[in-house]
Length: 202
Image (cartoon, rainbow, N blue to C red; front, top):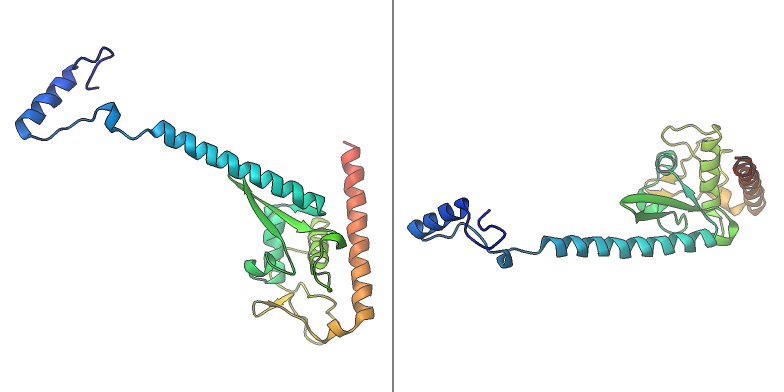
């Protein structure tokens, strides 16, 4: 400490003073010459608060649009199982959401036809994978999560092939698409009913 509480030079201050006098170089700073760390910390904290408030509003908006939160493990499972690049999963038509809040990342997925944006109900297919994973009927290994309405052909396709959602000839079969979609919607409905009963029973 260069100065004491009364503004007088301390022993260390005297040494610094005479050293500066001999060398011509100042080895201390006045308090007014130091950057205000407190102000920087406050600014950083305030910026974080603003960002968190924006994130909370976005989460509320997503929930109103029938998005459900999934865990990081489930998100990583989806990337692995579909073999889709992250930019595909986070963009149309999959439309998963990553939101940073409170120094953490939270993940959300469309779980209802109300928030689907494409004619093939792609998010519903992806959410059905999540439910199957939760219930243990789909394992956490790489690939072989077939894209919409596949599995009847000789080659089983991944949901994504060569970094893109694979859309084969099965997509032209509207009856088959509707049949698969109804199965997925039934799966989602049963899962949500089960979760509601579990929460109510707590």
